[in-house]
Length: 249
Image (cartoon, rainbow, N blue to C red; front, top):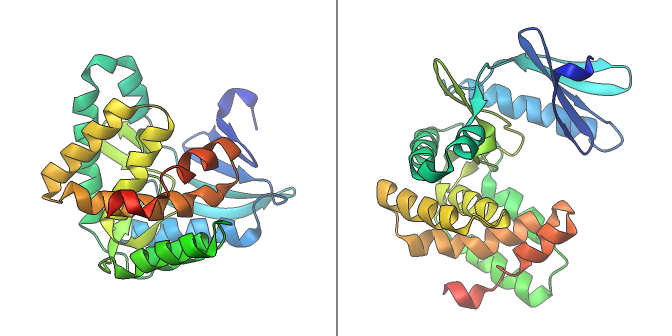
């Protein structure tokens, strides 16, 4: 691996380019084999929907590390385009929403269910039994849908290529209620302190999809709680401020 080819380095993970391939290398002491195989399986299943995403080429071992090899997509991320043209962020958010709506129009019936994943994560939050009960009760009451959900849909995971926009990083993909996916994107913008963008995104998504904003807001405590178990103390503290059922009755 040539250091010049490294695209990103994250805890336990390196992403780099080799010719026309993109390689994701995982540290097995941080990522168990089951996580890597599940990510590859999720990706392969989403490929079958026909959505524009890079194609998986192989799953292999390099030394002690597991790797996933897929097509390298030439282009800039939507985040890079937004950073280069900050005054016109709305047109990029609109572009992102249109892509998200296309994704939500699809189904991928072999993916894990979003509701099951959130149920498991809420039980791991360490919140009081009363709060967990309230969150689980609300989650159970929400409509059960089977739409394709990304789980980490944000401008860094959209590559704008000559032949269209590609969605990458399907490790959190599930099937479920699209408004939970929207709540997650809203929280991601908020985590970065981009409140103006977050509010524009939520308002515009609801307008384009004819979804009541209050409906998405009902998901915020559930999604915030389920995401708070990821281990980042600052992010957890921020997310737990959203875990107040009373504010979203």
